[in-house]
Structures are given as structure tokens and as C-alpha cells.
Amino acid sequence: MAILEVKHVDFRYADGPWILKDISFSVEEGERVAVLGPSGYGKSTLAKVIAGYLKPQGGEILWEGKPLPSSGFCPIQLIYQHPEKALNPRWKMKDSLEEAGVPSQEVLTEMGIREKWYERWPNELSGGELQRFCVARVLKPETRLLICDEMTTMLDAINQAHIWNFVLNYAQTHNMTLLAITHNQFLADQVATRVLRIPELNHIEVDQSSL
Amino acid sequence: MANEKFLKVKSEGLNRRRKILLIIFSGVIILAGVCLWGIALDPSRYAPNYEARRLAPSLLHLFGTDNLGRDMFYRTVCGLSTSIQIGLLSALISSFIALALGSMSAVFGGKVDQMVSFMVDLCMGVPHLILLILISIAVGGGAAGVITGVAVTHWPNLTRVIRAEVMQVRSAQYVQIARKLGKSNWHIAAKHIVPHVFPQYLVGLILLFPHAILHEAAITFLGYGLPLDTPAVGVILAESMKHLATGMWWLAFFPGIALLLMTQLFDVVGDYLKILIDPHSARQ
Image (cartoon, rainbow over all chains, first blue to last red; front, side, top):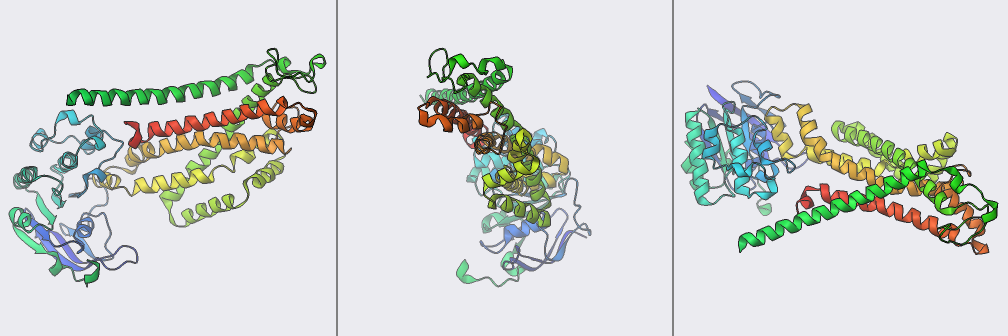
């Protein structure tokens, strides 16, 4: 049985144009799926809808056949493209990292998180360093599906490869399902067992002049 | 080399921080000192003394004496002290109203938000001084009237600030993530929202002081505020108007300057506190 089912999802912001129209697909447990597509096709919006950050106007998202739980640690976790927005600027890194409990030592070591960063503020670390914290804080046994929305866009190639290797490894050993959102064909081919192309999924009429 | 440069930058940052702390600290000390001095002052120091009427400023009477031979320096200190106390009380009440309305508006949204915004517009739409006078008279004048009037008319600006801040932090990604990490509303309120809003609240509270004090002096000056026998800056200034033509310039000059300096001091404390608390400038 599919662990995640996206059924005829429609979404738009307030009265704006439809961003997502009639999107349907499903993901099996332990699968690694890439959602691939150019800018402006609603990839990030789709990620937020699946993770429960936004309510779709039509259709539904089913997690193990049921709607997502509204409280408690969410089994679907989303890693955003912009780590600097995902961390409270008034919190030291240690507090943000441990907001949902202390990550395992393995995760901390493999993500290359140094202890001297713990006492710093978010504006004193680079985007790549911040993103490691964001990834590390959700790599937990309770996270069953990890959505990576352009997770490594701000990293250099070596760190990008390192983090992806570790996340893939972690997903394999902990039976965590992965959904990678990217515009990078090569990355999608590398990390995913199945690639979904958003222009084929999303039935909106894209206004060519606005792209 | 690089290390040396880094250290230099760091020590300069510390100095700036210390300088700001020092300014804030001395400002607060001066204001608290004036306030306490006024409370502790023996009323006989500014009691009428008919043998020393209409004296120009001298070492014995720093601000001179008035028509009844009252020492203007001590009268001014006492008046400023009264002003600070009234300012403190009304700023506290006003900022509390602002905190409650602003948070309600942001948290509940919809009808509540519309209602609060309407009240803010209403309160800001009426000329401030007229509203103050009306409320002050309606309550029955005197100190109670002034405090009520100043307290219930200074919340609109701060309400808007708090509403915007709460709304912004509520929709911030890190707060939404905290929710997804299974954090309760209480945790989010206590750890994310309050620490974000509190500094703004504190700065807003301090910046309310000069407004409250000046408005208190203004309506007292116009005769709708404190009774004539209280040593208040507004009363002093109103009385001095009658004697300016006779050449007693010191009656208005020194108390006026003192009032100006004190409100400026509150402004300075508030502004520097803002620099200190704001994360974007705090660690510079």
C-alpha cells in the first residue's frame, strides 16, 4: 500500500491564479522520488501542501490512508530552500538544533556540525552551515517521509554530494521515504528511484509570458 | 595579521556596546534620581517666602523665585517628579492596553482584528489634545483625570506595532516548523513569540513616556489638568505666562528647558535600548 497518496490536489493563494491543479500521485514506503520541473510550476508549493503547511482547496493528502495528524511530531518533515528563514534569529544554534530533542551523534558527525557553532547566532554562520542544522534536527526515527525542497542549492558541489550521500544512506538504513524537489535533472537522476515531472502532473495553464 | 584584524573589530564592538549600556544606565539613573528626589523633597523648600520674591537666578536660588517667593528649582524638581510618576503610570496602562489589543488582533484575526483596527483608527482620527481634554473632564479632572486621559489615548501606535510583530512572527517559517516538530502553542508563545515581541514592547513603553509627560504638561498648562496648587511643570508654565511681560523670564525658561531635557532623555534611553535589543544591530 502506498504510504503517501496525493489525490486531485488543487491549490491557490487567496484569490490568485491556480498554482496546483488536479495533482495526483502516490509514494510507496522506502521509495526515493524526485519531483522535477522548471521554476514557476509550483514545486515548492506542492512540497508545503504535502507537508501540511498549506491546506489544499481541493483534493486530499493521505498519510497511511488517513489525513495528516494536526498535532505532535509530524511524520512528514520538510526541509526548506532557505535555512536562514527556518531558524529563529534570536536563538543560539544549539537551541534550534535541539528544539525537537538532541539528534544522534552519528547524524551530527556525518552532517559536519561542529560544536563551536553551537553557541553562535544564525547570522554568524553561512547558509550551508545553517542548512546542516536544519537537516540534522529532522533526521529522527519519527520522521518517516523527508521532503527536500532544493535542500542543497546553496552548497558547493562537494558538500552537496556529502550531505546527499548521508541523507540517502540514512534513508536506506532507517527505512525513511524521500521526496526530493529539484530543478536539477542530474541530481534527480542521482538520488531518486523514480522521477516525476511536474509539468506532466500539474494541470495548470502556465502563462508563458510570466515565466 | 588576519587574526589581529579580527580581534580589533571584536574589541571595538564591545566598546560600542558598553558605551550604549553606559548611556542607557546613566539616563535611567538621572530620571529615577529626579523622580525620587521630588518625592523625598521637603515641601518647605518650595514654600512661599515673601521676603524672597521675584529674585533672578542666583547660587542661592538656581532657577530664581516667583511672585510668591517660591524657589523655582525645587518646584521644578518636584513638578518633574510628578510628571515622571504620571508618565510611568499612564505609559504602563497604555502599553498594557496595546499589548492586549495588539496580540488579540493578531491571534484571533477576522472580526476581532477589524474591531481593533477600527478602534485604533477612531482614536487616532480625533485630535489628540481634544480627546485628552474630553476624557480628563469626563473623569472629573485633577490627577485622576490626567492619568486616565493620558493612559487611554496613547495605545494606538503601539497596538499597531505589536499587532504587526505578532502576525509576522506567527507566520515565520521557524514558528511553523516548530509546530510541525510537535511543539505546543504554549511552547511557541513562550519561546518564539514573546521573546520576539517583548523588546518591541519595552522600547514602545519607554518611548511612550515623553508623549505622556508632554501631554500631561500640555493639558495642565491649558487648565484642564492638575490642580493649581500641585507643583507640576504645566502649572508652573501656565503661571509664568502672567509674569513674562514683567521681565521674569526665568519662570518659564528653566522649567521649560528642564521638561525638554527630561523628555529627550527618555527618548535617548528608548532609542539606545532599541539598538541594543535589535538582533541586527546588537552584535555590531
